[in-house]
Image (cartoon, rainbow over the protein chains, first blue to last red):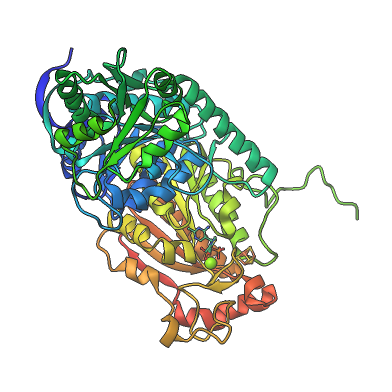
Length: 351
Length: 252
Ligand SMILES: Cc1ncc(C[n+]2csc(CCOP(=O)(O)OP(=O)(O)O)c2C)c(N)n1
Ligand code: SF4
Ligand SMILES: [Mg+2]
């Protein structure tokens, strides 16, 4: 298969996008995703593909809107403040049923915040973010190799469901170096033709890309189409991973960087005789609520750990209801929870 | 004398690229004339099968219905960025954006200037009617000094709201654009000239020369609260004083 290389998360995401057949990439510089932009600046033109350093995130996402309309695979990347600016465009992408990949290497917020790793954009990513009744698929990698795999998957899902897909990572994952086996490049010419694309009305009626209709009944129908698609995604695309849950008395729910730290905590706890497991959502939307609920039926306590004030925790509680105890431990502002600290939280609740 | 319909010569017809969808524009509005000129240009250059129109938010929001070609409805002000995305995805497509003065010269300022500065090989039609037509006649960045609008009921006071922005002159300062011109549509002479300018702006793109911008001084009789005829006279007598007609850049 592919070659094995030591790469940063940001570079792996960029390289995976190229291998997924991303033909147009548009972005505005921001820390901590700069290496992603730089990797694309070097490699996209070399391959005869489009790289534009846009004048703003607003412009970048609207360039994505144009390239997606023309039927090519396209991506933009940024970090929290820049992703806020992209929300208008993401809403338009969703409303117009356009496939695109958006990478958010999350940093501490709100406002300018800092440049340290955080998970404080979970609400924005999973609950809509922009205006209107929409969702996008949100993927949360927890290792560098997985960031590559999920980037490839993001392009696939975007095309399959004609929807924007977000890769939600953080600065720690973006900067971290790990050995990765890069996925094999796909053959762009083998991708199915997008019959709806505005790529020139030759031998067919004109295609129109839009997200509006002033007739509420028509707009309702357009919304129903989106909702139907979301139900399909919820039925087919939920992804999660369970670690050491089969005999567990207590489980941590965590995603991304925190899930990676939590795996260490599972080992530490087990060494001390605490039967700790880990439930790791990979798709943050659709959230693996049913699987989590099932797990909670045989476990007394489900501890949510996040680098936020408890944003995913809301989804955890919604899924589990009264089935188990649902305590929370979180850090904010870019502070990364240590394994020791998480373990002490586990001990508070374990038996 | 009975008219011989059978042998009548057709001297004026709807361009093939113009659909028969019902117009949403007010009587006397120049958006309509402009639409026809663009359709005619697409016909003459025989590019309908590879043209993609980017339509704005504004009175022209329904413009995707007017042409027999692919079209994209863009977010308010972002049409030049969307056009950039389409053109870069497939440089063989003929991409034009159609934008009002609020769209192009206010909310879309950054996207408009930077698409021009990159010299994107696109054609931009910029409709300067000195007002926000669609939302109810508010002040536009292009509104004249003293102009009464629904948000400047006393007339535009430059001390509070600045001066009319000559956006095309700003674009003309850049190195990349190959063609920047200002045209009008208030009589047949000017319609003919505007038609030539638009054809040139599209031809530049077909010949891969680069960025072309055609600003059009347009009448909005409804929000100017004028009869169509008076609106035309107003452009000739008043508007043209602030916005002089003619080519600003012609490197074609
Ligand atoms: C982000 C956003 N802000 C505001 C609006 C409301 N809006 C719709 S059209 C318009 C102004 C249009 O004026 P102009 O671009 O001059 O076009 P015209 O109608 O005059 O042709 C505004 C402010 C919007 N649709 N989106
Ligand atoms: S409001 Fe003005 S710009 Fe809009 S359609 Fe009517 S006349 Fe034209
Ligand atoms: Mg206007």
